[in-house]
Amino acid sequence: MEPADPTDQRLDERPSATEGEGERKVSSALEALLDFYISAGADGWLELDPADAFSLSEAPRPAAAPQAGRMAPAAMQSAMQSAALAAPARQMPPQSQQARSAPPMHPAPAHSSGAPVGGAAVVPGDEVVVAAREAARSAATLDELRETLARFDGCNLKLTAKSLVFADGPADAKVMFVGEAPGREEDARGLPFVGRSGQLLDRMLEAIGLARGEVYITNVVPWRPPGNRTPSPQETEICKPFVLRQIELVRPKVLVFLGGASAKALTGVQDGILRLRGRWLELPLGPDAQGATIRAMATLHPAYLLRSPVQKRYAWRDFLAIKAALDEASGS
Image (tube, rainbow, N blue to C red; front, side):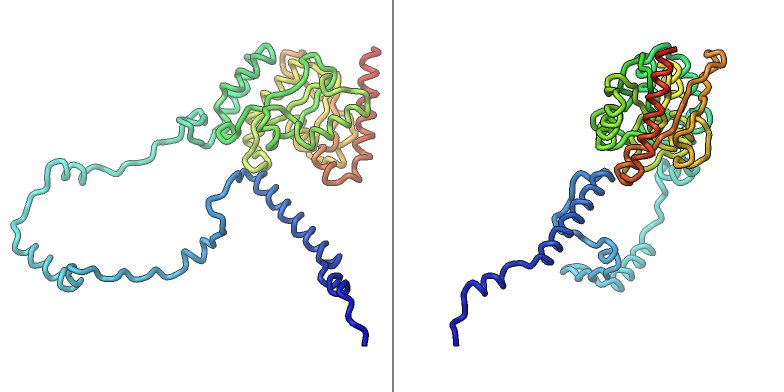
């Protein structure tokens, strides 16, 4: 009988390809979970080991042990009753009687303007939308509009966002891009489309001969919603006057909606983005524009293209149409 080869044992101890693949899947899943927590706003932890709060709340509480020198409950109750009968009746102090006879306090009504009072979030009313329109209309330049928006307290998203994400690009840009709302990277840097979606947008612009410094980029909502949630219709309606004023002040030759949300918010169309994209629309300007309109087109949002790369061919067609429209406007 031949002696066993020691290398056979070492080969058997090596992890198999299946085990290595399983470890990689677990590692990828943990990275995805961490990315989800960070996107949701979690930036730290309280304990190293997780605790099931539901099971802790349902667990029976241990009975408190009787302490030495204390009377038994029955004896204590009997002694208190005897003392109450023997003691003379005492009058309530005047201040206590006044406190007991005072009517119950009612919570103060919400501020009529709907603006956060003292840093607390309140439910805004219709008057906040009117105030937003008046504030936006009062700005004569983009710098004034930015300062006005920074002072505006009618949107509760301002309370949770780190920074105001106003816009990026020159005031005389020929093309303007409008998204829905900033994300985590945008909120941290105070600029729109600087994360992965922004990097893809930069490459798409380069493909049609445009640099990022030549275009104007903004969002309908200038503050990041908590956890990157979708802005509510009320939040969108409050912020809409400011982005419409930006469009009026920039007066681009071509307006591009990045995604269906911004197109629906500013034009009122209800078609999905796959049916809406690639179609030319006319966006009317404000009452001071004397009936002037701007050519607009909706295209797929870069974040959607990152999730569905197969749809990039449609975005490429849209960008070619945008380039042709810009060339036509420059030649006229």
